[in-house]
Length: 191
Image 1 (cartoon, rainbow, N blue to C red):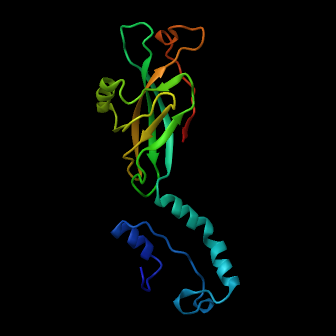
Image 2: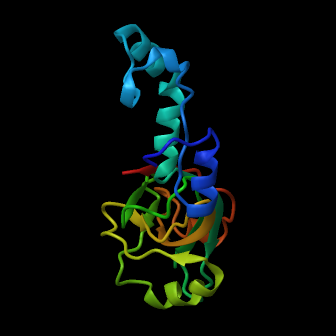
């Protein structure tokens, strides 16, 4: 802040100005020269060693800290046999102190039996499910990449994402998903 202030100035800056902040306990005045420079390398190393863990944690929290939890999937009702369109639902938490910093955070579904629908397909279904979701995906890549993007994540909030997917039948099991409604294991990873 550029001025002498009490130890709770970081709390005030955070609450009143919305600026994430924190202060280090730097020790005794006698260990410093004017302008807050430590007098010795030993003092400087001690300050850094004592504070590096929480400083790094603070920097991590200043941006986006994402957590993804699965909700499940819902098969889209269809009168056509073998129509395996579904909506995969995930809940994404932004535990960080900032709204989403980067546009289009890519997320990959690591399961060859779930294929992310390309952006142009399934448009009507995306619009219908918008009513049930806090946010919709802004776009998807081609299904060969099996990637979708997260956008619009607000700080300290969670959002539900509906991802249009095509369920691929396991080898030798045609129309498998016409009768199966159990869990599907997959890994979702940041790309």
